[in-house]
Amino acid sequence: MPNHANVIGVNMVKFEKPGKNEPYEIMAANAINGALKDAGIPYTAIEQAYASYVYGDSTCGQTALYKVGMTGIPIINVNNNCSSGSTALFLARQAVESGEADCVLAFGFEEMKPGALGENWVDRTSPFQWINDRFLQLDGKLPEGPIALKVFGAAGLEYLEKSGANHDIFGKVAVKSRKHAVHNPYSLFTNEMDLADVMNAPTVYPGLTRLMACPPTCGAAAVIVCSDRFAKKHNINKTVKIIAQAMATDQPDSHEDYLHLVGYGMTERAAKQAYDMAGFGPEEIDVIELHDCFTPNEVITYEGLGLCGEGEAETLINNQDNTYGGKYVINPSGGLMSKGHPLGATGLAQATELVWHLRGDAGSRQVEGARTALQHNLGLGGACVVTVYQKG
Image 1 (cartoon, rainbow, N blue to C red):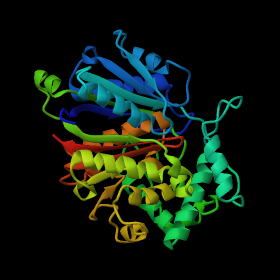
Image 2 (image 1 turned 90 degrees about the vertical axis):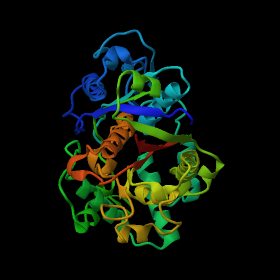
Image 3 (image 1 turned 180 degrees about the vertical axis):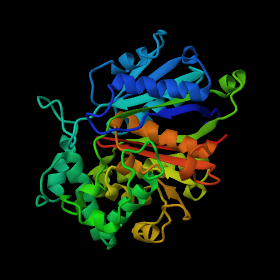
């Protein structure tokens, strides 16, 4: 990537429980206007826009952006399941690096319903059918349930069996994330929990309690990227560069076991590509936002991203190398577990959090001296995007 894209504006709205949110187009417009103000540019400077969401009819992106203005620019709607936000950013970054555009907007939003994720189109082949079929083939004794709950639950059980780790590591990760969220005014949950709270919460799937699963959430976020030429022309000095970004989808190894069924292989491949592009490995990363839709996935992802060796996540957790004062600060926002997970907005909210840290604008949760950040955003079905940012 010889011509890196610069992040010059970010913003998000506070995430809310379903029913307490504003309409999607209002949330999105507020996030976009905030990003424009952050960048210090007018809306007319935006040349293209990528809108990410999962639940909504076609061209919801236009409806949302029209609340900001109608300038006739290309608006592309993006749906890549839970990785939709980072996919929109992937496309925006490509547009800038290719020279197709000098200033591009990626924004995401979601209005979700209470309860576990479901499917809207039951009269055609489900994109999760192959995942469900393989889930049953791997172990027909595991109970049924909503697709995400059962596959991530099964992956958690498999990880414990393979690694010999104590089940409480999933609870410890939840406690850590909630402790981080206390300092995040944009987080849905801001009260601390102890390990007993998490482990004794109602069981939602074997090995998983309710406090190990992220809540359905509504919200929006926006990121503006530009070329070096645009930044120089507009005297923009407060930039964060995207120095590496890779997207991976499923390969045959996704059928191998439950860990791969929930994206371990995609994570590993995307991370390797991103590290190769960046020219360094995880040892250079200061702060990380990763996709912790269920706490077992955070644990699995530690190894997929190469933050520790295979089977070593328990040691990393017990040594507190996933929090302030340790080797990495992981999910300083509180993560999906605490901040919330409005699918289309999640990847862009992760990007926003990391940019704040690299600028030194993260307030009381600031990771001191942060210069390099990594983002991991995963969607079943599937896609995984890993992005490396560096202070400009």
